[in-house]
Length: 209
Image 1 (cartoon, rainbow, N blue to C red):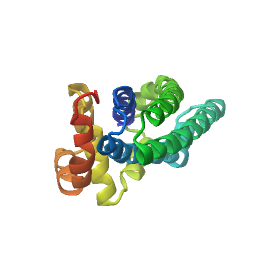
Image 2 (image 1 turned 135 degrees about the vertical axis):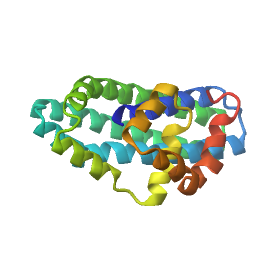
Image 3 (image 1 turned 180 degrees about the vertical axis):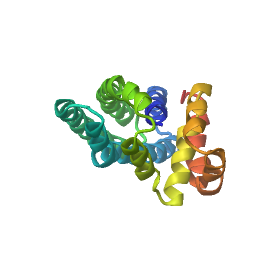
Image 4 (image 1 turned 135 degrees about the horizontal axis):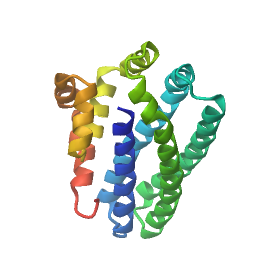
């Protein structure tokens, strides 16, 4: 599940890069759409890394990850949070102006965000993926999954709509292996309507991939 989320993060960062490169000066509708997509991405990434601090790190320590590794992850999270804040400001400016200059500024900020985020995701996966596979049935790991799964229906619906938007076969297989099929199908259908109507079309627009 962690890898599925990471794939969605990487996918959105790539989409933003392409969309900002092709942004046309004065396109206010596009700027507004990109900002809606940005707000969702910002929420998802912030929720993910804050949840790791609260839920995942104690579980990792319990299955043998060293405190030095957790400290390194925390440093990477701090760099990511700083870059996320800079990009938040830049995307807000673009939403207000719809100017090519602000699109360039946003692209520069998101390039930094992509660099620090992907660096962290790669490093984290090298440590956690083998551990999660080895300790899949460990009580601590199962409890971690339950805690991550406790979300309001609206939040969960948006999340499942987001991680499936553009997901490949391997990601969908991994998702269905971890989450009951009715949840994967029905939650985004019933409670992910805003994502499907207001955000997914932003990425369906030419030039966003």
